[in-house]
Every structure is written in structure tokens, then in C-alpha cells.
Image 1 (cartoon, rainbow, N blue to C red):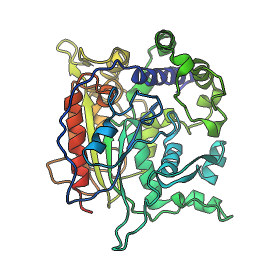
Image 2: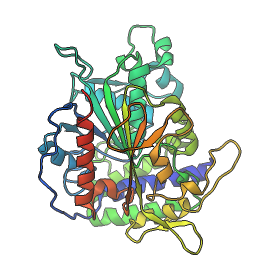
Image 3: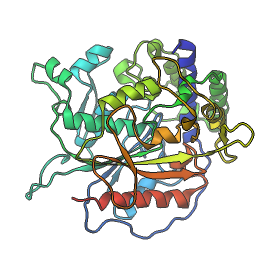
Image 4: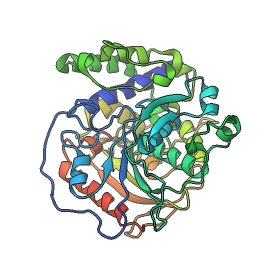
Length: 424
């Protein structure tokens, strides 16, 4: 992929962050019935944001999960224990997984001696108190304190990497760390995760990575317009968490200046240890081979679709309700094919999409040993249980819930109930 195309991808994805944060508020009252589990398990649900996402409290009253109304608070009111961490919005899945582990368990983020030396960034990151410090411990009866992991978009990739490291560790890290400072994340043998659920996750990457549209001027114009209307350039608290790379927001630096400094960094063209690579079909294939489904974990996936087949061209085109910022991407994805040797083959089975991720990519990772089935009410362990697709919902709507709140809330409630009804 050349530098010109890489920069277009970066600017497009940065724009999605801004659109997510500035979605207009629209409130719909949801059911207040208690869907919490009474007999299965009471493991906490960790909901991990995608690219350019944030935790529940990072952007004041703007919720990544729920938009105008906190989905975390709704689920908590129904009896579930839910956490919404904030990890590196544009970092690689490896780095995000390391941050997620520290967020849950507590301690200083350790990106690994071998990994940090290979890619040339700091080994250690921020320190967290731990929202669930008992993670992995056993009670008097020998029951392990496990968790359920749920991820939207890239968050679904991140949680798979965390599972891989917990269960199997890293031989490279063990070999490189001979001074006794090896982090427990890299030593393996930890069957601490009960389930993995992905929401509109590009398990197989996104063909948007091949887009030829000139998205950079569009991204900057959109940002400038929204910043002027909302003041986000001077007051936004969004933290891109690039400390390990030396790209930390300076005191008094406006978000607009910070944004431009990050996007114009030469770092994007020097390393694969950033989000962009993991989201290409080739990068996703590499991740799939690294992090296959584990035999002791339940896997669930949910796709979104907001396109339909054109009667004239037979391409997939956006539905009328799709967020305007996703239209160009969706149109491109709905007609693109690729048979370039050495790259992932893209055919018309990839065309149906939510504006960012194809339905095919959201169902199950391909290229490794992962298998999937249609969920029929009885989940199979070690296999992806496909929950189906949500129609007329785009990639942003599934978490922001601007127009389909009651329907989407019910979807999340049902998933939470499935998870907590799994065997203890």
C-alpha cells in the first residue's frame, strides 16, 4: 500500500471518530425490565470500543456505547456488571490488548520487551488501579473469576488478541525477558475468559483499505466545520494515547493541532504496529492466524447491514438512512473486487456492508481454523455462534443508537442475557 493511500485511510478513520463524538442527541425510552441472569454466571462484561473510540467518562456526556444515553448504565440497572475501558484509539491490537489487561487487572501497561524493541517504542505505558483486580483468581470452591469480552469494530480484534495472550502467552516475550520482569500476560495458561462477542468487527479486514477516493480534503473540511460549530478543537478531551510513541498531547494544545500532529506523523509509514495495518485484509489475515478461536471459550458475532443490491448494476449501494460520512466508503465497498496476487481475494460476497465493514468480514475470521454456525439458542463452545445481521443499521448507529435505540438496546440486553446464562 503506498503512502498516498495510507494517508487517505488515516484521515477517513479519524473523521469517523469525530462523527461518533458529535452525533445529534435523540432519546427513546427503553424497556426497564430486568434481564439479568439468576442462575448461570455473574462474570462482568467488558465492552471494548473500536478505532477512535473512548471510555464512558472520557468525553463528558457523549457515550461511545449508547450515544445520548449510556448503554453501560442501562445494563448496570438491569443487574449486569459492565465496564467500558478506554484503550489506545489508533494503536495496534497488540498494544490495545496490553492496555486492556492492565485496565482490568491493574498495574502498569507492559507492551512486552521483545515487542517494544522490535517496533521501537517504549516498553511501559500508563498505570491503572484495576477495575476487576480479582480477575483470574479462584474462590474457595475453586471457581475462576472470569470475564465476558465484547468489542465493537476493531474492539472485536483487540479482545481476540488479549485472549490469545492470556491462553498461550508469547514465546518471543518469554525468550527475550530473562531478567525476571516478564509480565504475567505473556506467560500463558490463563483460561480466564468465558466468552468473546464481536459487534460489526472487521475480522477479515475492510476493503475500504483499497479505496481510491480523495478522503483527506473531505476529512479536514468536515473536522473544521464541526470544530467551529462545537468548539471541539479547543475543548475536546479525546486522548489518542500514543504515549509509547512519543506523540502525547501537550498541555494547552488544541485538539485540532494534536489531531494534525498525529495524522502528519511519519510514523504511519514506518511501522505495522498501528491500527491501520490490522484493519487491512492482509493485516487481518495475519491476526487471524495468530489468534484463532480457543476451545474453552464461547464466541458470538453480530453483523450490521445498511446496503441493498442495485437493480441496475447489481452492486450493493447504501440505504437512505446511512450516515452521510459513510456513503463514499460504502459505495466503494459495494463494488470493489481484488484478485491481486499476494493479497486477499475480494469478490462480490464482500459487497454487503455497514459503511465500514462487510457482513462477510463481521461473521467469522477466515484464514485460520475458526468455524461458525448460525446461533439457534444453544451456543457451541470454541465455535463462532453467528447471531445474525441487524438490517438498516450502519457502523456508527449500532453503538450510537441515534435512530434505532429501542431495537438496538433490546439486542444488547439479549446478548447480555445469553452471556450470563452460559455455564459457570
